[in-house]
Amino acid sequence: MAIPQHTIDQILDRTDIVDLIGQRVKLKKTGRTYSGCCPFHQEKTPSFHVYRDKQYFHCFGCQANGNAIRFLMDIDGRNFVDVMKELSNKTGIDLPKDNHDNKKLSYKRSPQPTPAAQPPVTQDKTTELNPPIQTPMDDHFIDMDRFMDDPFAQFDPSFMVDENVQEGNLYDLLENVAQFYERQLPNSQKGQNYFKQRGLSAQTIQFWRLGYAPEDWQHLEKAFPQDIEGLKQIGLIRSSDSGRDFDLLRDRVIFPIRDHKGRVVGFGGRALNDEIKPKYINSPDSEVFHKNQLLYGLYEGRKLKANDWLMVEGYMDVIALQQYGINGAVATLGTASNADHLTTLFKQNSRITIAFDGDAAGQKAARRTLEIALPLLNDGRELKFFVLPNEHDPDSLIRREGLENFQKLLQQAPLLSDFVFAHLTGQHDVSSPEGKSLVMGELRELTELLPKQGSFRYLLTQSFREKLGLGKRFTPQISHDASLSFNIHTKDEDFAVAILMANPYLYTHFEILRAYINQDDLLGSILFKLDQIFESLPEDQEQAVYYALGACNSYANDIATILSITDIFSMLTSPEKAFNHAKEYSLGLQNKFLKHKIKSAKTLQEATNLRQKYNELTKQISLRLLS
Image 1 (spheres, rainbow, N blue to C red):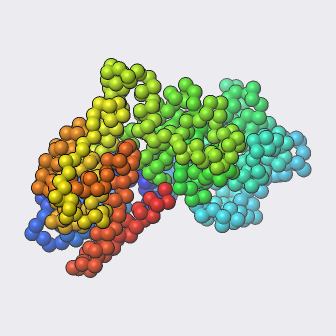
Image 2: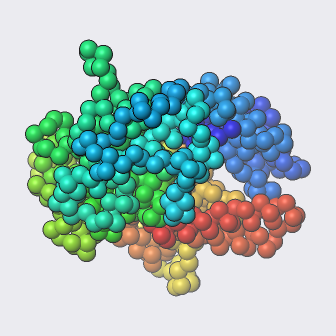
Image 3: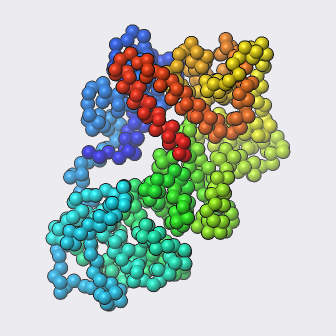
């Protein structure tokens, strides 16, 4: 059974891991976690911790860890599907049925017409210009070059179906239609001229599988006489009020739309005459096409191993940017961006950029996207806003500026924190107390949308207060006696201490280090203290710093010296910089401590678990270096 990732995520979101594990393990609330004796190895002192906000468990002893699914698999020795069925019943979220039970992708094919009754496939009444389409099933022909060149392609043997079978598959039909439209383009001078005027090369047209839909109102019926029912299911054939069938896409250039597996699931059609409305038509939603969940160019970007992702408005923006060498551009399918779109992009990279027009409509769209994005900004995610010059879209801008200048403009796109500050202060007179108060009031409404567990809400508010002159940075009192004996070669552990004291809410990035670090070390002691007080930290930045310093008063001299020599406050000038530094030092220290922990593992099982964690960490570090 193939279970989509979004279904797994939905089930985990609705599963309270504390309640689930609490049925098997006696848990006690300790600071931010719930702890108990590990069920996977014998111990007297509890080292097994469950994190409700992260839906995650971790044993500091045997290094067992994972989510609710992993816990049930390990505790009962069950397989993945059995566990998912149990959690599905508990959460009320249905799992997809087995493929052989899923009839939604099937349709009834009509009997093969006799040769005499079969109408010619042509818009010009000449089969010489438009020969009958050879489908991938004819003579058992398979376009193997496409599969060899396409590592994401899904080859399905059922694709080779006999023409006489009475049941068709929607994915196969869509692929056949895509090939049909591709083969019509060389016969349409209008279609070729449109792409030529837009500056597309033959290689680009082939890569994106662009095509042309003939003017004939029944060209699909003539090309696929056995598949009328299937064509109606996917909305490519419509019925008029009088009951006559007609094709949805006519005399339009065609953009095949592919899902994340590379399967054609729908089409976009652009009118060749600008006076025809609507200019763009997309396939309607069907069993295989859900435009609110799809991004045009995502599959192609993944195929080209894109690292940086940019959301733009239209198909041609995506295609033009790819032709110039920017491979990570995607576009929504005629709809406004939504949470599903942004979540999909954040799964590709924790840093994404969204392009907007510089006019009033673009500003309005940016504000709407901002409000959608804020609840998704878990710690470590970064969003940038690329505001385009007036009267330009990405397609026209990259043609005017060229690749190098375009990339510079893209890199200069403001971070979310800077964009929000410019957006809010542009609406109020911040030279007056009243204006500053209004800005902070609007900011408060926006920050309420941020995840409550993360630190971004705290950091964003802190940044605004400082920019508006409403607060002052904490300046530590330095003990010169302590600094005389301090090792001047600053370690990563010292930077971690400095970050934690300057921004105690960044503790969530470092708490995992408690699994590997000695509690007698300075960093280990501070992490232990912060875990105890984290839930009680004041929202005000300055108060939170003093609160954390008070809890760590025993180490005041060492902390003051570290804050002085690291000059940490100059490093954390924006919420995003604070995030990035915290993530960087956390990953580096995890790498360091895990290596040491593996060498001192007491059992083979412990060493195996640690090695698995180390491999996962190495992947995280590699992805971060690429992003």
